[in-house]
Amino acid sequence: MTSEPTAADAKQREPSGDTRLRRLVVGQGLAAVVDALFLIWLTLFVLKLSEPGMTTGFVLVAVALPRTLLLLPAGVLVDRVGPGRVAAVAAWLRVGVLLALTVIVVSTSTSTSPSVTTVAILAGLLGIADAAYFPAALALLPAVAPAAKLPQVNALVQGAESGGDLIGPAVAAGVIAAVGFEATLAGITVVAASAALALVSLRRVAKAAEADHDAEPQSSARALAAGLRHAWNEPLVRGMLAAVAVINIAVVGPVIVGGAVLADQRLGGAGALGIVLSGFGAGALTGSLLAGLLPSDRRGWIVVGGVAAIGAGTAGLAAVTHVIAATAVVSLAGIGSGFLGVVIVATLQESVPEGLRGRVLSLVVLATVAFDPISYALAGALLPYGTTVLFLASGGAVLACAALMATSPAMRTLR
Image: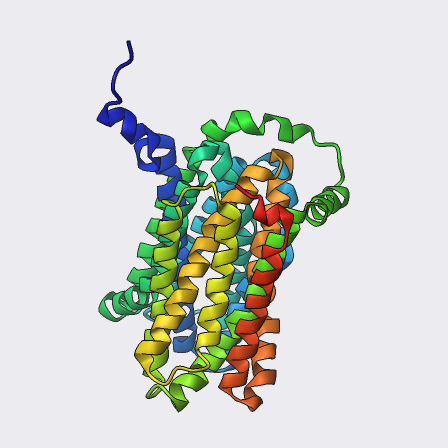
């Protein structure tokens, strides 16, 4: 005789119904919120210390450069010592750096301000922590969550990230205006500590899965080469990484740079850009959450559709003349981006062998951040021909990528 499933049983099948998964979602979600809030805090604080210009760029590069350069070595480290250990250490390194920065900012608030160099050094340490944390966090999910729940868990985590990106700027700016830089940074540090506590509590859960990592005999260079070979030799992995790279090259710069020009020329002024970008954020949040609800039996076509949605939304900006229409087409691109973020990561978490996950997932992170300068340069090169040419060329490149992916047997058969 079989019993009917109870409400408690159903709850256990959901990500929020498992204590370990709740800790995972809370820890990584809070970490994403910290990223969104701190970036705004750092930008505004540096602007307070100096006039707008090279100084702000210098500090932001101090965060981005070590993060980009160390991502691939960090992937090797994740595969060698395990994602739980690396994620925990990186999370607490973040807390330590934020706490040190808080002490410096508070101690100098009544006298001289901290030097930009000091802020840049601490920001660089955060970049190092980020380089280790990002691939470790992605590789930790399949060590904690069952394969069947990976899309749902990724949807919740990336939904928190998209939500932080959507409301983070307004929240951070509002809190700074209300209580000042010192109290705001202290609050961000508390949130980072809460995230670290949640992630450290998963260390024991992931420990058994990490037991084999300690005995890896390869040198770091050979281990990195093995990860690169796997990514290149596997058609599915190679195609997904190529799609992420193409999207970031063809979309980031044109939407940010071209969007600013479009807002000024057609949409009524610079304020319209904020509305349009909020539409993208809302779309990304929606796409992330919906991706966790869709069945996975047509995953390959979902990826193709997500890429096509991004291309169509970008190309659609070529024709818009009103802020509502621009927000609508950018929201379409955001929905596609949210879908892709969940489906691609979940697919790679499932399909890549455990001992290579850190290296392959570090390539995914690298593909999302390393090509931004190229994208901005591309936008600058096409802008003299007008925003119509810029958006049609950028969106067309992404649509061509979607068409090529649709011809791939590995993508068409992906379930």
